[in-house]
Length: 198
Image (cartoon, rainbow, N blue to C red; front, side, top):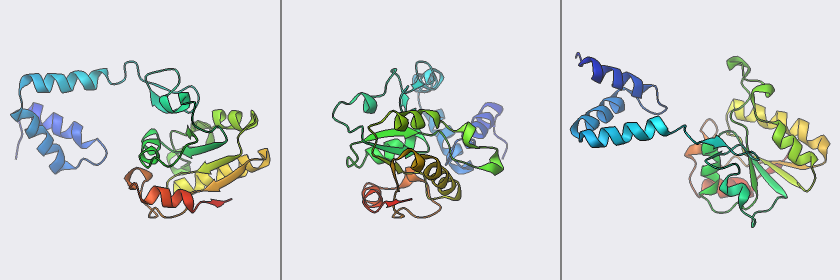
């Protein structure tokens, strides 16, 4: 079926989003067509302003609209434990459990030589600076249980252990090959409880 050009362009653009296939893109497009012009304009305005005022936290690299994110600004959290995650949405997944009360560090990726992502492409320096600054007793490697996540965890353990910090890895309560983002509020606490030292 031939779609009118604006409909076809929107379907194609929506298909580029993660988790959106051709059918979902079509359903979203037709949902927007059924809505009011005001609804479409409001959504478009929110999307166009998304990057305005958004930055990464100067301490942990989480997504925030402040210099320091809410988690890093929380005085109740422990500075002794840092949980390292690949992406900002992984931090949100761990936070949903309400079990972890330490600090975070977001790498913004995982090692993937085939995609040209090496250590220099990850946000590692801030983590190393925090550990070298003292006071950090444990770094929990909560990278996804994928080949890339495992490679990243092994690399981080190798560079962190000589700094005198305990390095642990979340347990494999999360299915291998899945993404941390999709783990539920029961699986993540179990994985944190069963972490092991590298």
